[in-house]
Image 1 (tube, rainbow, N blue to C red):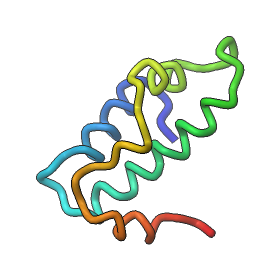
Image 2 (image 1 turned 30 degrees about the vertical axis):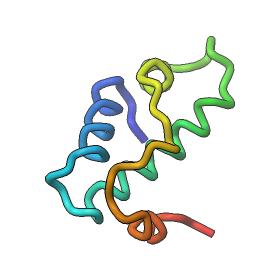
Image 3 (image 1 turned 60 degrees about the horizontal axis):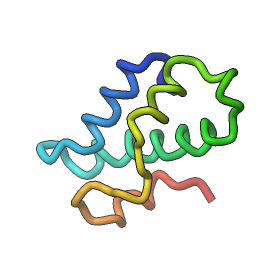
Image 4 (image 1 turned 90 degrees about the horizontal axis):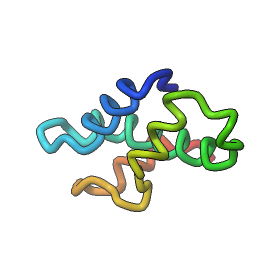
Length: 78
């Protein structure tokens, strides 16, 4: 899990970098999606800097990078 706003920015930049392979962007993207989901259920007063940063950056898990979505399936836990 990201611990600072800088780590959130790094994950976002890897997840949306067109120069990396699908296997390289899939894991950061799924991690950001899960982190965003958890943060959305936390009371704002209890959020740390990374949590506040992902909400401020308005990371939208529905906006996927322009790569085949089947690569995301390998990171989903049933």
